[in-house]
Image (cartoon, rainbow over all chains, first blue to last red):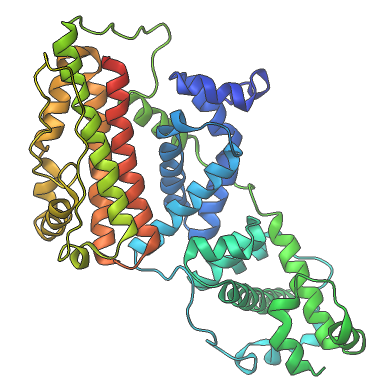
Length: 197
Length: 249
C-alpha cells in the first residue's frame, strides 16, 4: 500500500468527498492524521497491538460521524479529542486508573536521586528520545495519562481535568510528579549506561 | 523562600517565568535551579514525541474493510437506488413514524445523561411525552410502535427496562432485534431495498454501542463520561433513523 497523493486535494475537499463515500478521500484523511492518532495511543498504552486497535477504533468512530462534521472546529481537534476519549474509555474498562487520586505516593526521600550522587549525572543538555520513551512507558498509568496529554499532546490542564475527571490542581500535581519520576528514571538509565561502558 | 517551599509551589509555578521570591531562590540555589531546568527540558523534549510513530499498514486495511462492510465506502460509479414509488399517503404515513421514534431516542438519551444512575431515577419516573406527528384527517393516524426496548419507550419504562436489560444475559439481549428495529428494517426493505444490508449493519453496530455504553454506565453510575458516551450512542441511532427518513422520502 502506498500513500495517496495528499497534495492533490485539501483536507476540506477530502472531508466532503468522504461524506459521499469516496474511499480515496477516507484514505487521505487517514494518512494525514495516522501518526498523531497512533502515537497518542502508543504513548498512553505502551502496547503497540492495543495502540493499533484503538487507533483503528478512533478512526472508525470519526468516519462514521463524518457526515455530521460542519467545519466549525478543526478536523484534527475533533479527531484528537475522539482519540483521547477512546483511550480513556479503554483504560476505564480495564479498570486501570486514568489519573492517580493519591496526592503523595512517595516522598522525595524515597526517590532514587539520593542513591545516584546526582552531581555527576546532570540531565541538562540533552535527552535521548528513546530513553525518554522508555521512561514514559515505565510511569504508573495515572501519571502517564496526564504527562502524555499535557507535555506530549499539548492539552491544557483545564482540558485534561474535564477529560479525565479530576481537578485542575490534581492535574498539575500529577504532571509534576510524572516529570519528577521521569527525571529519576532518566538519571538511572544514564547511570546504568555509564557503568556498562 | 526555602527549597521545601519551592518544591511545594513548583507544580503551580512551572509554567510561568521565575520571578519574585521564586526567581530569587533559583538564582542562588543550584539544586533547585537544576531541578527546574531538568523538568523544563523533559517537558520540551516530550513535545517532540507527538506524531512520531507510524502504525502498520494493516490498520488502514482493517479500517477500509470495516467502512465497506458498513456501507460508508461506495464503489466508484455506484448510483443510489431510487426510492420505491408508493402512494403519497402510505408513503407519508410509513416514513413519518420514524420522526417520533427518533425524537424519543434523543429524549430518553437526554434524560439518562442529565440525571443520576438509572436505578435511582427509575423510582421517580418523569412525565415525558413522546411527540406524535400530526397527519391529515384523511390519513390513518400513525401509531408509535409499542416499545419493548429501552431505545423507544417513554423514559420511565425506558429506564426501568434499561436496568432490567442490563441485569439480564447481555448476550441474549445483544442478539435480538427490537420490534422497532425490525419495523425500521422492514420499511427500508420496502422503500429502499438496496440499502437494507447497509442499514442492518449500521443498526447492529449502533445497538452494540448503546448496549456497551449502558453496561458501562451501570457499573459506573457517577461517571459523567459514561453518561456522555451513552448519549452519543443514542444520538448515533437517532442519526441513523433520520438518515433513513431522508433516504426514503
